[in-house]
Image (cartoon, rainbow, N blue to C red):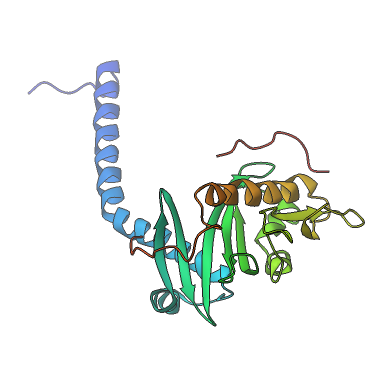
Length: 226
C-alpha cells in the first residue's frame, strides 16, 4: 500500500475539507436539537416582559408561565396583536417598537379599561449604553408612566412627553428623561407615539372593548448621546 504523503497540499486540502464537513454536520445537529428549547426561552422571555408591564416582576420561570396563563390572553384587531390582562380589572397591553441611539428598542404599554390611563410599562433595548440609554430597562424609569394619560382632555391621542428637567410638553403629560440619554429618551417618546398611532388608525380607541381572539422598524439614529 502506498504511503500517504501527509505533507502534500492535496492531503492538507482533503483533511481540512473533511474536518469542516464534520464540524458543520455536528453544529447542524446541535442547533436542531436546541431549537425547540431556544424558541421556548424566547416565548418565556416575551411573557415575562408582558407580565412586567402589569407590574408582575421578578417571577421565576415556572411562576411566570403560571401567572401568564392565569392573567393574560392574546387578542387581534385587524393585523395588530395586543393582549388583555385581568388583574384588578381589565387592562389592554399594547406592544411598541422603535429605535434608540444604537439599535432597536421595544416594550409594552398596559392601559386601564378606559384605554387612556397607563397601568404599567415595560421597555427593553438591543444595544443602548449601560448607565445611559440602557436605563430605559429599569423599573425606576418605567414606573414614572403609571397613572399618566395618553389622551388629551378632548379624547384625542397625544402620547407621553419624555422631557428634560424644566421643559414642558404642550398638550401632553410627561415623565423625566434619562440624564445624559436625550436621544434614547426621545426615542421612547417617538416609539410610543408611532406604535400607538397604528392602534388609533385601527379604531382601537374609538370602539367598545375589542373582541378577544385567542391566538398568540425603525432605523437607529447614528448620533451621539447628549
